[in-house]
Amino acid sequence: MKHLALVAALAIALPAAAQEAEEPDTPSSVVASASAEEWRAVAPEDILVMQLAPDTRGSERTVVIQLMSPPFSQPWVENLRALAQARWWDGTSVYRVQDNYVTQWGDATEAKPLPEGLEAPDSDYAVTTVVGEEDEIILWHPRQHQRDNHAHWTQFKDGWPSATIVGENTRTLTQWPIHCYGYIGVARDYAPDTGTGAELYAIIGQPQRHMDRNLAVVGRVIEGMEHLSSLPRGSGELGFYSEDEADLRTPILSVRLASDLADPPAYEYLASDSESFARYVEVRANRDDAFYTVPAGGVDVCSVQVPVHRMGQ
Amino acid sequence: MKHLALVAALAIALPAAAQEAEEPDTPSSVVASASAEEWRAVAPEDILVMQLAPDTRGSERTVVIQLMSPPFSQPWVENLRALAQARWWDGTSVYRVQDNYVTQWGDATEAKPLPEGLEAPDSDYAVTTVVGEEDEIILWHPRQHQRDNHAHWTQFKDGWPSATIVGENTRTLTQWPIHCYGYIGVARDYAPDTGTGAELYAIIGQPQRHMDRNLAVVGRVIEGMEHLSSLPRGSGELGFYSEDEADLRTPILSVRLASDLADPPAYEYLASDSESFARYVEVRANRDDAFYTVPAGGVDVCSVQVPVHRMGQ
Image (tube, rainbow over all chains, first blue to last red; front, side, top):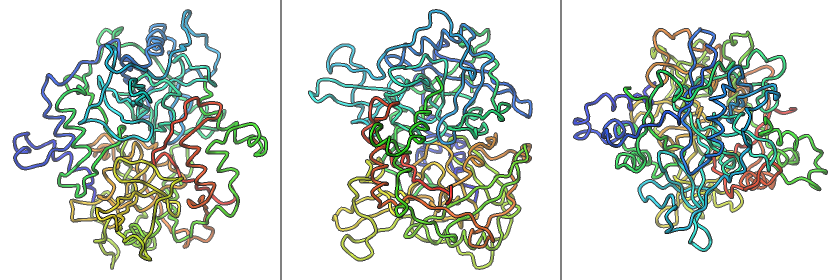
């Protein structure tokens, strides 16, 4: 009865040769058989390591965040690096957990001064480029696009999902990064405020894609997501911990750029322009291994979790 | 900085008249102004009340589940009622929590005998009807359909989301229920096994829609979802609690049909064929209140959470 998903584990355990001969591909088997050249290292300056206070059993809680790649959200990403280097988050907390929505952290007092020189970005949430010009960033990838309720299509570039709308003159593409489970965004006040990045949230439920283009997506959790998603929900309005729940706030001990650590963890992701990634998307959309009898025929962009793992693991 | 979403609360607090005059509709304001006739009671025999052991702070944990309406998944739903009446789940546990996937419960020993007479259904996961015949169940609702990667369209009936594929001869419709956040499905072994309903899971992350038509969707959590989603993740394979984590299993004290309780909780949902529901979907797809500057232009079916609340609240 409990075998719902044990099948996937079984497939991983089989040698690759046996699988090719006998078993249909699964997303896991495609990732496991990707070649070394299809993986790309994440730069240490694109990794934030957040140390939360130990849990009630005394276990360490480390959350590792990969920062968004260009061309998206870079003014906020720069702020995040500056905030980490100023050690601004040390001593702050996770102060809001709203079920099926977000976990949010930063300065619960709303009084902590920001580092000098930190600017509130007035950058756009989307990037528009002219088709055929040199800075054009993403075109149609027939093997990895998904239908979408919010755009003409979605696709992956440099390991990040984004959405595309073709301009009415068909000469321009407008593209933006997407809120998926585990993705990190910048909390803000009413527009035209765009936030600085000091207050951040992680998506812990069904992504609410109407947040796209209205809030900056600046990264994603690549390790330790469970430390944000399994926290007790706040009973205050919108999941903020109420005054008599202040003890539920999770202290943030430190947040550091991996490039500032003596012994940084290293990660790599499956290149989204690789053959294995294209195959991974196809197999996700059409499971026909032993557990599944009806292939889905398609896949939502956020159901395609980009494979990222710690190097050496 | 923390106002990400406080705007919604503000909108709720305004009197309806003031909103109509000055503020654009929000999903919350549309629900708040729905008329009494637009709400439908959930029948007590369609409600399961699951009592978990109190949490570490001594607080009670009650999870309330609404059972799937016809024509979908009814053989399993019948089993769920029989299992509750046999008190089969009393003394079982939540034994698996896999981040961004499922929380699963039932008999961790895999040895507990099922009630006599409980049949493993061989029912279909989808329903096919002929257009124009009397038993045709769902047609196109222009104001509430969503584009979908897995079907020709999706829609709501009796407060439940489902997907539709039009047959090649355009004379038949095939429809099935959808896995969304908080929805409950029936764990099973390899096909052709379809499970009995004794082992259940709840979706606690990005819904993996390839599970649709491969596993039976039998209900959804309508209260207490946080008691399933915030549990510690299992470190065993696929989120099962490993042998040295057996203390992390959450004991299930009892599961009862509301119709068998002396003082049952009562719920109602916003009728999906009501004007307010259609408006709710439209507003979800096109937020233009003070917090949002770019309307999404569409909404994924699972981002349309059907409004359900406890009566009198």
